[in-house]
Amino acid sequence: MHILRIDQALERCEEHLTATSAFGTQIDSLLTHALLVLMYAEFEKTIKKLMREKCSSVKDESIRGFLGECVKAVFRGLKLSDMAGSINKFGTVHKEIW
Image 1 (cartoon, rainbow, N blue to C red):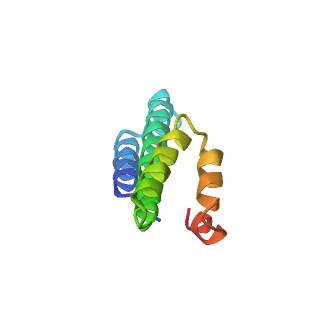
Image 2: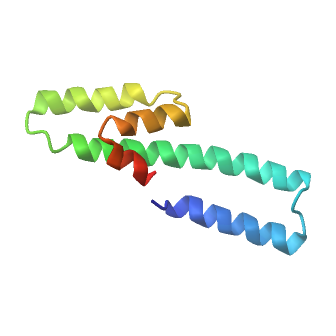
Image 3: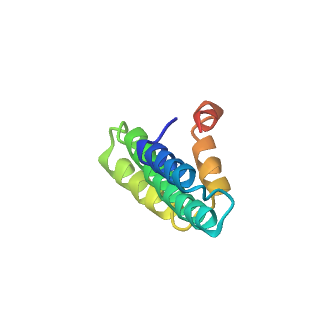
C-alpha cells in the first residue's frame, strides 16, 4: 500500500539530498527524523480510516458507535508493532498489505 503524502515527502527529501550532496550529513539525519514522524502520523491516520470503514458495515448503530470508540481508544500512542497487531485482528491478509 502506498500513501501519497509519504511517497511525495520521500521523493522531495531525496531530490534535496541529491541536489545538495547532503547524504550522510546532519541535514540527512534531521530529514530522516522528520520523515519518521510524518510516516507514523500517516500510518495512524490511514489505519484509523480503514478500521472506521470496516466498522461502518455493521448495521446496529449502537455496536457501530462502540466500535468507533474502540478504534479511538486503541490508537492513543501506539507503537508501529501495536498498529500491526491491531490490523492483524482483522485477519492476516490485512496485515500482509502493510
